[in-house]
Amino acid sequence: CRRAVLNERVDEFEFFLEKPWSDGFPVVTPTEERISRILAQTERDYEEVIGLIPPAMEIATVRTVAVHALMAGCRPEYLPVVLGATELMLREEFNVNGVQGTMHGVAPMMIVNGPYAAEIGVHGGNGCLGPGFRANATIGRAIRLILMNLGAGIPGISSMTVFGMPSRYTYCLSENMEDHPWDSLAVSKGYRPDENVITMAMVESPRFCFDDVSDEPDRLLLGIADTMAAMGSWNMHARSDMVVAMGPQHAGICARAGLRHRDVHRRLCELAGLRVGDLKTGGNWRRERALALPIKVDPDDDDFFVPAIKDPEDLQLIVAGGWGPCTAVCHGWSGGSRAVHGTYQV
Image 1: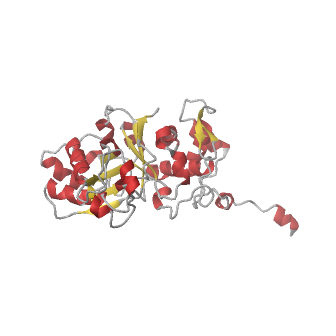
Image 2 (image 1 turned 90 degrees about the vertical axis):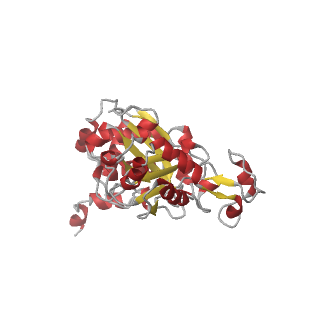
Image 3 (image 1 turned 30 degrees about the vertical axis):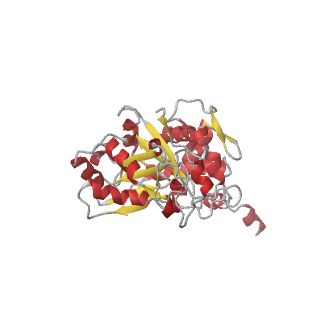
């Protein structure tokens, strides 16, 4: 019996699932053969330092990022996107350290634009937020495993998020360029259509604006703007990022009326918000918060309009999802993070 116990084979899946840094799902066992196969996708030095992952400040190298991409289930060709996203999220203005420990439930949403995203199958159409699409699921999961394993973003230890949320498993998508009436988000930021670009924003899981009645932009955008404004949303009480993902049907209504991407973006910034008098009745209102906003607010004027978007750069407007009368609105964090974007090496 003793010999049988000693010779018992270790269950590789149970081994990882029992670790405190597991995301709760089985991982691909990172054997040397598998690691070599995924590293073959890059010409970068395997020991090149990407950066320190807070709060534990463990070193992320090309190799350790590849190991986590492998564990998450990534195909080798996904590695350049995971490397690019890791570099991007470590920019100071993104403040991943703050989000690692926050009580909030935000997560880094990755919007991947460009020809390489299409080539490897990052999905932006029907059901793009999952489940069912390996590139979306595993690229986003790799980022989460890096934050947990190298950064120690472990619930109840350094991560104080009250609830967490499903998008903390993975939060990665592309835009639906097949049904897109405008240029991509990346092009709106000044990149060329042939450049491979990632945009990352710290946002909540989406709230949906379902509108199968509006057939003209004014009515449609009022409903979306209402979904963007809520007393309990940090966007009303601080300068925070927001992602609005218009479904192709809603975007098409605007485009057929002659509105361009920048027109819709501007109109949503103008419409989304609440009066001071409404904000005082509940939610996260504090007079000192209103006075600290980067825009002038009169906390004594109940009719004063407070916009949800304090700076137009904070609204990331994309077109994604399948056909149907729906737009997804993803509210932001408490003002401590700025969205980041940049190209990545393929």
